[in-house]
Amino acid sequence: MADSDANNSNEQPQEFTLSTQAARQLTTVTKSAPQMEGLTSRWLLKILPWVSVKGGGYRVNRVVRVLRDGQVAFTNTGATAQIIPETLSELSFLNGFNDPTVLNALAGRFTQQEFNAGDEIVTQGQSADQFVLIVHGKADKIGPGAYDDQAILSKLAGGDSFGEEVILESKDQWSFTVKATTRCIVLSLSQKAFEEVVNQSPELKKQVDDHIKQFKSKRVRSDRHGQPLVDVAAGHTGVPTIPATFVDYDVKPREYELSVAQTILRIHTRVADLYNDPMNQTEQQLKLTIDQIHEREEQELINNPDFGLIHNADFKQRIHTRSGPPTPDDLDELITRRRDPQFLLAHPRAIAAFGRECNRLGLYPQHINLGGQQVPAWRNIPLLPCSKIPITEKQTTSILVLRVGEQNQGVIGLNQTGIPDEYQPGLNVRFMGIDDKAVISYLVSAYFSVAVLVPDALGILEDVEVGR
Image 1 (cartoon, helix red, strand yellow):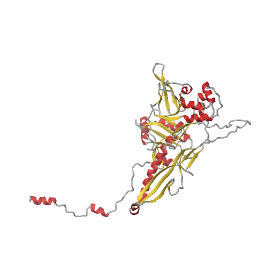
Image 2 (cartoon, helix red, strand yellow; image 1 turned 180 degrees about the vertical axis):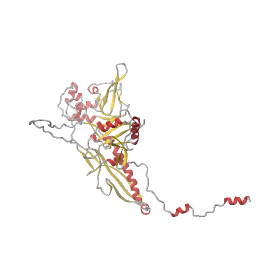
Image 3 (cartoon, helix red, strand yellow; image 1 turned 90 degrees about the horizontal axis):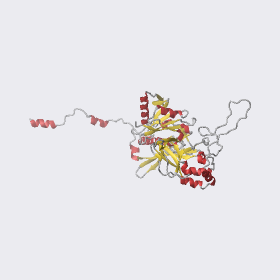
Image 4 (cartoon, rainbow, N blue to C red; image 1 turned 120 degrees about the horizontal axis):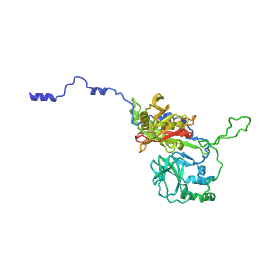
C-alpha cells in the first residue's frame, strides 16, 4: 500500500486545459520602443533661438571699447584671458606711454594661471620676480599687522594688480601673501620678460628708470561699459551748436565657427531587411543615436573651452555667492545686473540647494508654465535644470542667467540649415555604403555653436555650494 502511494505521488498532475505558457506561443506581445537611461530635458537646446548661418561661421560686431581710467581691461576668448594692450598705460609705471608696439609686446608676454579658493597666489618670504594682474575673482593681501600678527592689508578683485615694485626694482622676497578667497584667474609678467621688452625701447626704459608717474594723457571719455560716449545735446534752449559724433565699430570682431558632433551608425543588412515589423530598426537606431548626439551637443554648448557658456561669460558678469549656498539674495544680485533676464540654468542639485535656503527663510518660490510644463521660477524667471553644468570636487557649481535672441542682443544658438541629407535642422544622416560584411554605415553629424552678442546677455553665479 505504501509503495502504491509513493508511485502516485511521483506522477505529474493531469492537465485539464491548455497552459498559459503554451498559449503565449500563439500571441503577439505588445512592445515599447527602445528606452534609454541618461536622457535629460535639454532645456538649453529648447530655449535658445537658433540662427542659421552661412559658410559655417557667425561674426559678432560690437561697438569698439575704449580705455577705462585707472584699470587694465581684459577680453576673453573661451577660457583664455587677454589684456587689451592699450590699457596697460593705465598702470602707474606705464602711465602715458602709448607706443602700441611695446604695449602689444608686453601684453603678449603675460602668462595665465588659475587658483582655487584658499590657494596662495604668492607667498610671503618666497622669491619675488613677477608682476601680477587679477583678471577675475577675489583675493586677500595678507601681511604683518600692527600687533605682530597677520592682518588683511587689502582686498583685491578683478582689475587690481600687485608687484609693481618687482618690475621697477629688484625685490628678493615677497613681503606679503596673496591668498585667493574665490576661484581666481591671474595674468603674470616676469621681471625678465619685462626687461627684455623694455630694453628694446629707449623711451620706455627712460620712463621706467625715472619712475615718472604723473604723465597726463588725454583720455577718451567712456561709459561704464567701456564704450565711447556719444555726444548728444539735450535740454537746451536757443540756438546752440549741436555736437557732431559717430559710433565706432570694433575692427577685430569675434567670429564663431560651427562645431560638430559626429558618430558612425552601423546596422547589419539582415537586421534592416527582416526585423522591421512593427518598428523600423533603422529608425529606432537613428532615434537613439540622435538623442545621444543632442546630449553631447548641450554638453559642448555649456562646457566647451572655446565657445561654451561657462567659459565665455565676460569676467565682469561673474559674481560669487555671499556665504556659499545659493540664497535668494544671490539670485537677486545675479538677475539685477542685466536687463531683461529671461532664463536661469542650474544643476538640479543647485536648484535643490536653493530650495533649502528658501525653506530656511520661509520663502516659497512660485512655479510658472513654460511650454506646457510647470517649472520652478524666481522673480518670475524660469529656473531650469541642466545636469551638464559641472560640479567640482569641492561640491561647488555655477548658476547661469541668460537673455536670448538676436533682437534682444542676447545669447543665440548657431547652426546651418539646408545641408546635404538633412534629417533635422543642422543635423544630417549620410549613407556611407555597405562593407564586405554586409554592414550598412551611416554618418550622423550635428553642426552647432553658441554666441553671446553682448556681455550682459550672460551672467554666472560662481562657487555655489551644493554640499551643505
